[in-house]
Image (cartoon, rainbow, N blue to C red; front, side, top):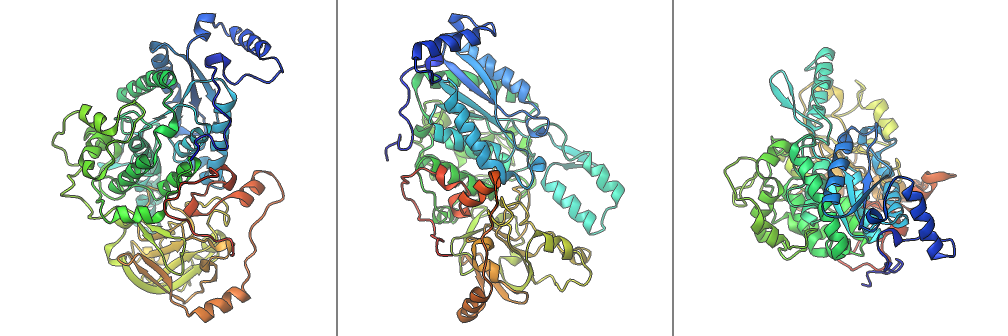
Length: 587
């Protein structure tokens, strides 16, 4: 593939001469630029250094990024120590709990903001600082499209809290404690007490949710400094990583090692291995597909599933295990995990240091006894944390986090209890007269990329209250939406094609039989083909639309889950084929 396809040629000028504003006179443009920036007190000597952009995603609405001022200060220090000129600039910042209707709705917008601000402003390399779930993928998507030397810095995980002598942390314990409250196991006073303890500091979720998953995955990709994924947000180690990241950005600017030379197919395959070995978030699949698509690489679900059959879960962190991110850091973090996975990795993959993964592992600290990262021969789960399902309900694929589900539900057939949309579920789920039992399959429609819109994390359908009070902890649940990486249970997600574009999910009725077989990788509606055809003919689906604004753009251009829920016009035009995605144009 021509790496500059659909991109302007890289400018030969560097520093402040890079990407001059169009006035028709390049010399005057540079003269004017320097005049304005000198108003901030800069000298010609400073302006002659390599310019390092620093993406500032700090926001009062984003406590996951609450350490942003300290991180920027440390990055700036590293840049200056290495002889560069640091220039921080703001972009969109997205937090999971402060984004309506859902953060995924805004991920692509943030990626466009990141890409265009990198393009528009002079910088020889860029430090991407993100943390909360959609920020790191958005930044990597934007930087991949901009094709400027880039390095990722994550904000780091929050500290663990304590409730009545028990360690607790966001957000697996948020869900477990809320489920106890719904089941009347704890009262309003105690749930309020728990609420004060779940988030003990600024930083991202303390379990292997999407933020921690993307931090680990980014280090596996080679775009984060070795050992940079795991240090807590408020630790001295996090600040030292930030300083080293700034210094490395200057080296990137001088060497010209660009992002497409790091994020190669081998790097993405390493990232998939790590995703499976950490029991990581299902959301990371969507993000990796989207990032790869910006670089012209097709990542298919079949590749993921093939790897899953031979890649065990080694990391004992919630929601699959019992520990927290700060424990993972103390156990050696990503270098320790990558050392265990060496037989399964592409060791010649390039990293942001300019050295290969094999060279970096040779430089890593020696192994020591700990109980968080298991040896390859003694995993906590024999296969990867995620499995890809197919069948007539999901010809384009669906995902289940098998490592965090009730093993007794992995092979299951049950009666469908159907909710047409989020409003229908909210109205009926906890009704005493809901016709539901523990062996049923809960089905939620119209929460896919277009259906909600934005594919919200509502696929983690709560156990109906009357069953929760009976002690039911898990059920088979099926939807075209997502769930938080901190969630758990026998939840089938990302059903493709989604209901809102006419996927078979739209035509599931109450009482239908649904079969789940994880061993056979199957999710099927057990209804005769002729009946299905009749339903499709008599139940036409109208694709959602909007009159104006970003919502109109989103609904017109967003892709399905198997293409990463990116906008079609942002993906690279010439893709190097891996597994072919399914064509749903006829729906």
